[in-house]
Length: 145
Image 1 (cartoon, rainbow, N blue to C red):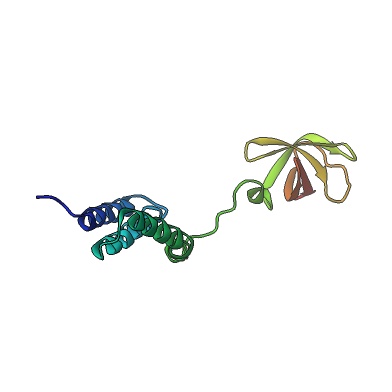
Image 2 (image 1 turned 180 degrees about the horizontal axis):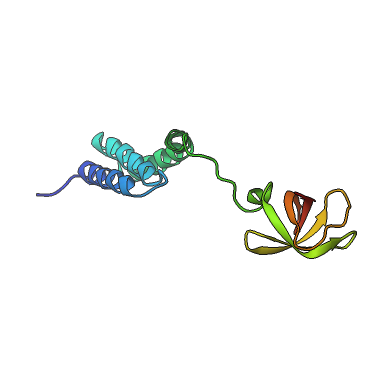
């Protein structure tokens, strides 16, 4: 028994939808939609070029329309977690080397050693707890806590 191109495309679409369930990101679902589109073209006796064109076209359209919508729906209740430099803002650190203005000093924050300067230009002694106000390149702007 020989499978028709329509059946091959439908098998591919089903497999891709099943794989989408176990992988995150809504990428394979776009490919599955493309395969379903190609199956539709094949069902109407479209040639190989038409099938591949339909596959590519539907994949592109769904990737830029369906995927963003699905991600918004799937991740709407997910809390925004600050990371990188954004996570430092408001964090507490300890002065390792006294902050002597204008040169600054060293502050230990979340296990990392940073160059720091005082927000208001006042010297801060070592072993004092500080709050990170903002980050300017690789320098923390801090204030006594």
